Image (cartoon, rainbow, N blue to C red; front, side):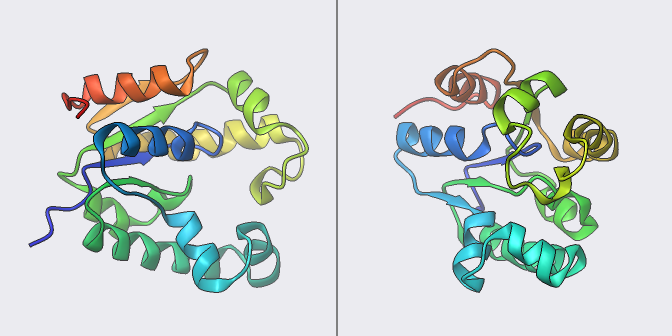
Length: 172
C-alpha cells in the first residue's frame, strides 16, 4: 500500500517548490514529481495557455485530478501548483502528510518571479495581485502544512536543508 509522498511542498509561485523539490529528491534518493508539469505533459499545453484559453475553473479541475493522482501514486518528493490548496478535496488529501509550506514576502516574490513573467494571475499590477493572492491563500497553506519554512534570502540548498530539519528527515 502506498504511504504517499515522502514530502509535499506547497506555497506561492516563485517560492522555489520545483528547485527545492528536485534538491530534496536528490538528497533523499527518491523521485521528484511536480503536478504543474504533470498537467503540461497530460495536455501538451502550458499552464498560462490553459488559463487563457480554457479559463481558471477548467485548469483547477485538471489540477485537482493531477494532485489526487500524484498523492495516490507518488512516494518521493511532490510539489504542488501555487493554487492547488484552494480545493477543499485537495486539502483533505494532504491531511496527515508531511507538507512543507515554502513562504516568502512580496519583495522576494517580485525579485524571483519578476514583473514580466508569464504568470496569468499576475498579469496586471503584480505586487498588488501577489499580495491579494497571498491574503486569500496564506491560511490555506498554513492549514495543510506540518511545517513552514521561510525562503527569503536563502539559497535553494539552505531551504532544502531547513525542510529536512523541520520535518526531521535525514539525508541518505
